[in-house]
Length: 216
Image (cartoon, rainbow, N blue to C red; front, side, top):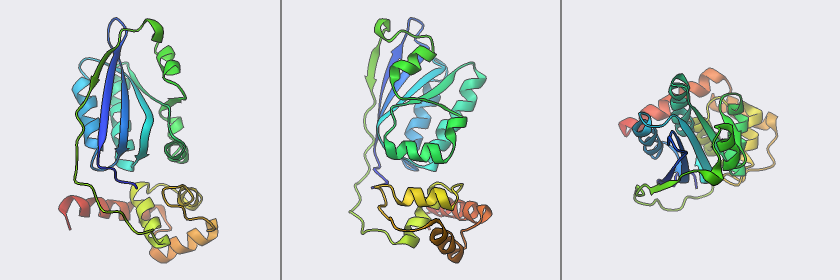
């Protein structure tokens, strides 16, 4: 299920100067919950400038979630810091890879590697744990399996920069489970929906985002 509508953040400050923080995230980072991560990053921006985001318990990251991380990455680097991602699940890493975010934001398979990159020693690090209270939203009823058209619209709404090949790979993820569609089939279906061009995809995603904010 894409929208978990809950995101928990546990934080640990590392090192003597406590300028490095580990976020252990649990849940989904989507349109509704990305604001939680954004506010947490902004709140700590006056105190720390090195972030390790542990995605081990994150099931899904939407374009809104990636947007929050990339936005804070720019500001953090301008202040001499950085944001590093660690421990992604296969489904989340697939999107990270498809969007070529590896060219922008660093990823390590383990927290220890990220801390070493920051010059911290995990074994000697002073850790002060804090768990943020979960934000709950009324759970939604289970959904029927998506049709191909519904899945295509949802994928483009979340990741409008994906091409036909990338969309095909996302369709095959457990989240959608739609296999057996060739890249050509995906392309022609997108063309029928008017979503085969980058401009068309971006416009559709923008319209859907605008509609969700106005409640239409």
